[in-house]
Image 1 (tube, rainbow, N blue to C red):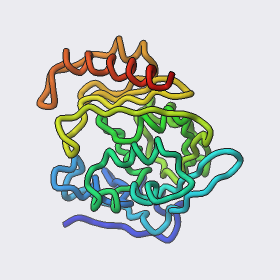
Image 2 (image 1 turned 45 degrees about the vertical axis):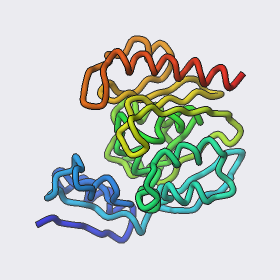
Image 3 (image 1 turned 180 degrees about the vertical axis):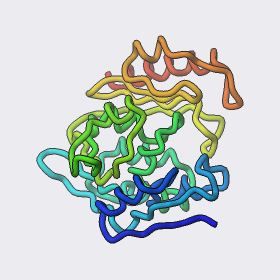
Image 4 (image 1 turned 120 degrees about the vertical axis):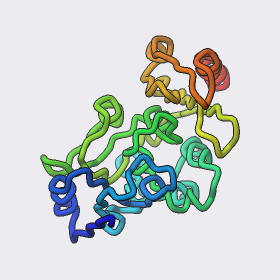
Length: 235
């Protein structure tokens, strides 16, 4: 039987996660509790859904999104730029958008992530709680090192940046083959089976693989085409 721990504070939740072998955090639950989730059905959960902030505010020229905010919360907020709303709309199911949290999508580090390329292009900084207490971590660093056991509390995004996004998938509800974002802060992408690219050189050098989603040759081609298209649109 699955154990679910619900602590009274972020600090205690973090400590519990470190004490219990294989435990994972639970917020929205769209990934952890999904039928084909990579998280094992008997894996212990540390429920932080009531502890992480959900508000969306502007502060010091940046947009701050609480870790508990769902995809739909982001779409419904008048403060959020259109490019980030477009990224959230890539999750086609409204029922999932009302459940899935922005921070949860980041923490899962999926190579078909709806949001990570766009958030990288938005110069996102994560506010996290970990062994050293609360601190800020650039999203790029978090992705590079494969995440951590910390709890994401909020995401801070450059409110003035411009970002264009394009996702290639067989259908709106399919896993993406390629998801590309081009903006003020550079070119970023995730490629199914290959991982994340942090610039155009990464995109050209990464190892593309054949899988059930698509062929390696196709992924390489559309990744390059997406970058060229978005650059052209941006002018």
